[in-house]
Structures are given as structure tokens and as C-alpha cells.
Length: 91
Image 1 (cartoon, rainbow, N blue to C red):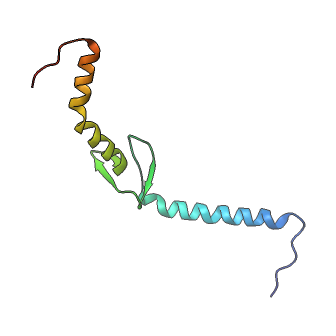
Image 2 (image 1 turned 90 degrees about the horizontal axis):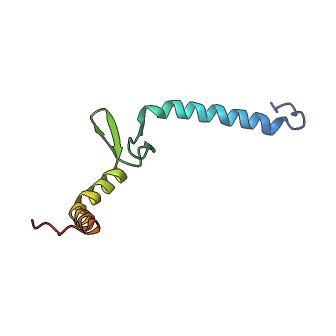
Image 3 (image 1 turned 60 degrees about the vertical axis):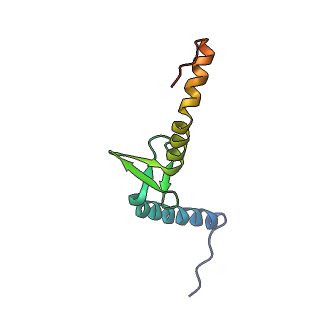
């Protein structure tokens, strides 16, 4: 049975409402698997791995940045000592 003709301007409005309802239903269904990284505050879902540290979640991108930071920590400390004008410490 064909649908009755819509009033002018009513078609796009109904489509937008229907799309909004579908998006809400999808979001409610998927929120159980969504996590928020406590460092970058990005909402992460399936495609990006996350790890739980205590009660907080951290994404793989932040873990990589922390790893790089820790690997270069000695270099940063050396630069900080040089900028203060102190003689470098020997390890």
C-alpha cells in the first residue's frame, strides 16, 4: 500500500527525526563498549585498544606517548641541567 503524500516540507523533517531515533538506539546499544581515556579524554570504541589502570582507562596512543617520554627522560634531564647553567652530573 503506498504511503499518503506528505505535506510540503514534512518529508525531510520526518526523515531527520527517524535518523535521530536510530542514532540514539545505536548509541545506547554501543555505550557499554565505549571508554574514555583519562589522559586525552577521547572516547574510544573497539578500533583503538584501551587498558584499564586502576579504575581509569588509557588508550594505546597515550601509552605510546608515555613510553616515548620515559625513553627520552635522560636527554630531557640533561637539557634541563644545561639550561640552568649547572655542570652535568656523571652517571
